[in-house]
Image 1 (cartoon, helix red, strand yellow):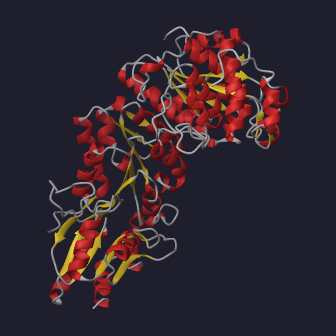
Image 2 (image 1 turned 45 degrees about the horizontal axis):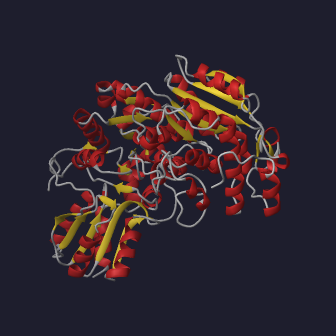
Image 3 (image 1 turned 135 degrees about the vertical axis):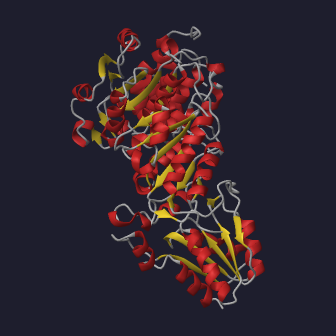
Length: 280
Length: 311
């Protein structure tokens, strides 16, 4: 892993600007969850993930792997990958447009670096990550496999099939994170699907659970460090976050799960987010 | 071609999986609590590090296989055809086909010959589902020997494969060494009066039909369509041009099956009169495989009857 040239807060602020600009330009997309996952995902890519952007390969051999199960937060994923050097930042302007490698939800069809599998239909990423982690065990490759889930996504049954499978097979090179932002499209998660106490649920499924303020950089670093200690089985980091973090009128509101800002709202949002590295 | 002794096609899969597993260390296998039914014991015992018991959780199994494939393995997932298709359609679509992961779906107990378990388990629409899926290759071999060869060919084929086979013991009549090539139809009996295109368990019935027709002075041409997708269109068009009449035979619903597929090809390239031996819209029922094949007309007698309708 190379030392990232900017500080985590500088990356995070620029990435939040990219998210707002991409979604506004596309007139569609998912800003709320992109903003809630920005801080801990930036720490992951800037400081923890053992990957070198120019040497990334889809088979993930001899490197850490990351799977995005909540494919709808593609604005964050694409901005993060571009800002870390996986592909040109200028390509962010093509998000959701005809012929773009930056499809509405991540796709492998056009070979965008950083993406191992398609995601968007929820509930599938943890299973795929289990397979990749088992493959690394067969190969004697000691790198880790990371995967990001959503709290709303955890209403999908397949998540719990995978939870049971990973614990049963003691997959100890697997680090899952949940963006616990408490909101989903139709409203607060507790009013819609009632995932309840995720901490108790994952523990009951046989996972080691770490909880963390997903917007507090030092806590995030400590959580990743703990998750990387030798384990007997899989680890879940529950990231306590806020939907729309960083933009006041989107903060903690399900209404911004999957809606693009107007031009006026874009201006208001960008006024709250410092341009640190330079807009694309 | 003669029956060298009845065998189940699923045992052909088990034998092929073990052989290719011995040869290629990239081959791994996953099963959802059906190791015995899928005949995966030999592989599981010989290669425990490369075998994963997934429990009764097929959606997770499909995703896990996709993850193994992304990282360079060649996973075979084994379960019943119903659970390998309808139950996990979205997982197969997103994590396997759209993601272009090299997963081989081994689907046993396909069709009505699953028998006594009844309609909950008798999928008669799996070919329709799987052939509609972009990037999917669909294979439906006819006997033990062909299933064994198709399994090994699937491992070497690049991309997702749906490999369909069955539960009952049926005649084993093709040579142990093939020929077998994915995507290339096999002309088993040359003829000039009518073309019979058969797939899966119906190939043996079609061979019997060719004999009965021969006794009536009708020279039928029989082509074994072991690969539904990619379909060997040229072989079908050439034969239809020669004989001017086509009958298809399959253990599947009319909807989305081989017959409709062939009808589409002929309508575009070489319209000739045709008939379909397949199950009409509806679910199956409990019974022995032989009883059910007769009740739904999936047999040599009905193939002969359909040929006679065209004359």
